[in-house]
Amino acid sequence: MRIGILTSGGDAPGMNAAISAVVKSAEHNNIEVLGIKYGFQGLVKEEVISLNCFDVDGISQRGGTILKTARCQEFIKEDGKQKAINTLKKYRINGLIVIGGNGSFEGAKELAKSGIKVVGIPGTIDNDLAYTDFCIGFDTTLNTVLECIGKIKDSDSSHEKTTIVEVMGRYCGDLALYAGLAGGGEIIATPEKKLSYDIICKRLKENVDKGKKDNVIIITEKMYDIEDLKEYIEVNLRISLRSTVLGFVQRGGNPSGFDRVLATKMGVRAVELLRDGIDRRFVGIKENKIIDINFNEINYQNISRQKEYDYLDQIL
Ligand SMILES: Nc1ncnc2c1ncn2[C@@H]1O[C@H](COP(=O)(O)OP(=O)(O)OP(=O)(O)O)[C@@H](O)[C@H]1O
Ligand SMILES: O=P(O)(O)OC[C@H]1O[C@](O)(CO)[C@@H](O)[C@@H]1O
Ligand SMILES: [Mg+2]
Image (tube, rainbow, N blue to C red; front, side, top):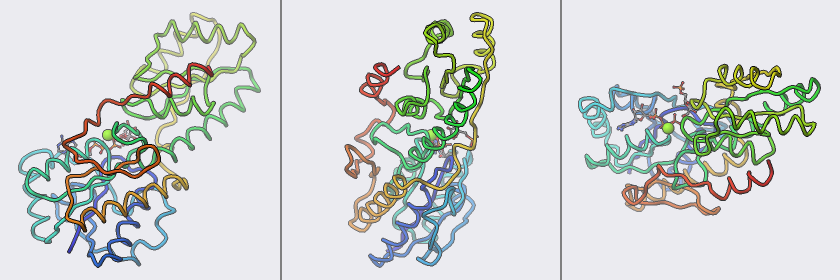
């Protein structure tokens, strides 16, 4: 048996640990592994390499992805998809493991429609796949966010000033929410719990009036224009603020122990599925158990974090 593996969409810390687990467990099960470089683009452009245990030696601890990644528009078009399928056929790949986020999973589903056996592993710092509690990369990024905010807080508390911190997440508020749950901020605005400028001002004023003069306002990207929000607060409350967009520092760094273990378990499960002739599955973790679900049975778009928001409300 011969399987392929690719990483797609934004890189996420822990993708390498997943690649390593796939290659090692495949070898354990006498399965050959081919790596496809640059995600779906590597299928379209036929960038295929062989992978063995020596190739993945020591990579688990490293951020990024040794297979590289890309966002590939060509693959979304029929012609590009056909080229991708031809590559899979040419290399006699009988099963494909796709590591990525929601977009990559859509790509995997497209390939499955043409008879390709696919299994998905969730790898995205956004944590925006509803069927799984955690995606590979989220924990590491959360820790990076907290470390950065911690440094901002040292300065904020010394000067008794407030900073607006914009974190990634695309249209999912998990990074901001969990940073808030970890005690990283005083006001948290996410796409799921959007706050108006006036509510943010009101909460900040309440804090300042109570004597809490250093505040961190965490916002998810794409919700507001951070400079516009800063100016609004400054004009309305007559205080001076700072703003920081954390940016790509959030995608980098060595994966946390949690992400490495998660990636290893998911990688091994993905190989077991293909070995056993089971495909069209997305692997996940639910209540601390590794799960796999037929991708036609899940809607991964509606995330409910009601419980987490309840906790947050009680600590802010
Ligand atoms: N509807 C779709 N049909 C086929 N392929 C898709 C579709 N959506 C996305 N893809 C493929 O998946 C790639 C990655 O998708 P996307 O850029 O949305 O990242 P992602 O996998 O969601 O990861 P992340 O959000 O963490 O960056 C796209 O560049 C494209 O090649
Ligand atoms: O790498 P790009 O294409 O600039 O995309 C940035 C986006 O990718 C992510 O880092 C992961 O999906 C998002 O949080 C962010 O909005
Ligand atoms: Mg995505």
